[in-house]
Image 1 (cartoon, each protein chain N blue to C red):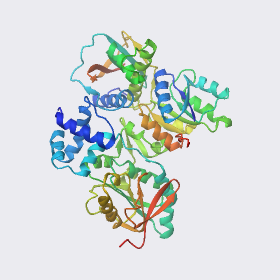
Image 2 (image 1 turned 90 degrees about the horizontal axis):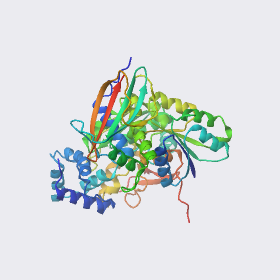
Image 3 (image 1 turned 30 degrees about the vertical axis):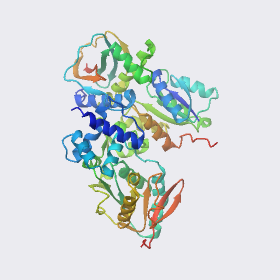
Image 4 (image 1 turned 135 degrees about the horizontal axis):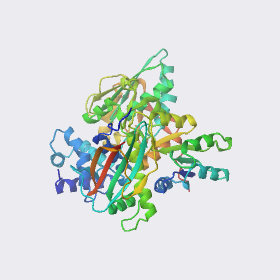
Length: 274
Length: 150
Length: 127
C-alpha cells in the first residue's frame, strides 16, 4: 500500500517541527508501518484516511501520538532507573509507616504502552516487598498495546532494553524467539483501556500513580485537568511519580515535592487544593 | 531427539528482521519477504553449522555486491568506500553468526555453533536435507536464508 | 572512562567500540580472552569489559571466571555481549560473575540502557 504524497509531506513537516527529526523521501514505508496501528485504533482503513482526518480536525493529542510513533523506538524497562529506586527505597517504606498493618498496595501505571513500566513496578516490588499484595492498574488509549501488555511476551530486542539480566532470568522464560514474563507478574497487573481526558479508571483508590512522560504532550490547561483527575483517585498521602524532566510545580499545588536522590516524588497533601 | 523443524518460516523472518533492524539498518522496514527466491547472478555465501543432538547449517546467500553493501552498512562505512576482503568476510560472517545463533536458541537441546565462514561455492553438507528457505529483499536486493539438517 | 571490547569478529569490535565512543568511552580491543587477560596482566585498567562468548583460544565465560578470580580486578564491570541467548546460558554467565548480559542483535540504545543500569554512563565534565 503506497502512501499519498501529501500524507507523507504533512507527516514529515509535523515531525520536523515538533522533534527536529527529518523524514526524507524514501521513508514512506516507515510512516506507513508506524502509523498503521494508529489508523487501526481510529478504525480507519488506511494511513491516508487517518492523516486526512487529522488534517481536517487537528487534535493536539493525536498529533503528538503521530510524532511519538515516528520518533520513538522501543520503550524500555526500569526507564531512568531512579524512580523505581525511589519507589522501593522511599515511597513504599513511607506508605507502610503511615499506615501500619497495611498488607496491600494499589498502583496506577498511566499511559502504560506495552506494559514495561507496569511490569517493572511489579518486579521492583516483588524484590523489595515480597509479602505485600500488589495490584497494578495499567492503562493506555491504544487497544493494541494493551493486548501485548496482557500477553507479557516480548522480543529479544525489547528485553535487551534496560532490563537487568538477573531480572530477565528470574522473571522470564523463553518462548520461541520471545521472552515471556511469569504468570505471577502477569497476575499482578490489570490492563485496561483508558483516556486521560476522561474520568479516572477503576482499580483505585491508588497509593502510587506513575504518570511519566505523558504531561509533556499537553498544554497547561490539560495538564491541570489530568492532574486534578489523578488526585481524585489517590489516597491522601499517596504518591505521584512523573518523568525526569517533569514537575507539578506551577501546575497543581495539591502535591508536595519530595527530593529523593537525584529525582523527585510528589506526595498528595492531606488538605486538597481548593 | 531434536529436529530443526522448529525453524518455521515466521521465526526465521522474525530473527532476520531483528538482526537487520538492530545492527545493519538501525531501524526496521528495509527487509521484506519475497514470494520466491530471486535468481542470484553472482552469489556469495555465509554460514554457521550447529551441533546439538542433531546437526545442521544456517546459510545466507546473496550477490557479492549485496554482501559488500551489507558490510558497508554494518560497519557504518560511506557508500563510496571500498570494502576490503577481510572486512567483507568478517561482516558478512558476523551476520550469519548472529542469525545462526538466534536460530540455535530455538532448539530444545542446548547446542554449539561453529565460527562463521564465508565463501563460494558452499561446501556440501553430506546427507543434509533442506528444512526451510526464506527469500528476502533487503533494500530491494535479494537475500536468501536456508536451514539444513543432517 | 575506559572500556575493553573483546570479540573475535573485527566487525563486532568496531561496532561496539563506536557505540561506546559515542557514549564517551575510550576503548581498547582484544580478539579473544587470552589477549584480554594479557592486557590486564600488563597493568591496563578498564571500567567496563564487553565480552563475546564464543571465541577461540579462551572464550568469554572462561575470561569472566579468570577475572573474578583476581581481587585486583574487582572493579572491572563485565557485560557479556553474545548470541548465546538460552536461559541457562545467561544463568551460567551471571553465576560465573558477569554483571550484565546483552543478547545479539542489539541496538546502540540497548547498550546505553544497560550502562545506565550499571551507573556507567560517563557524565559530562562541567566547565
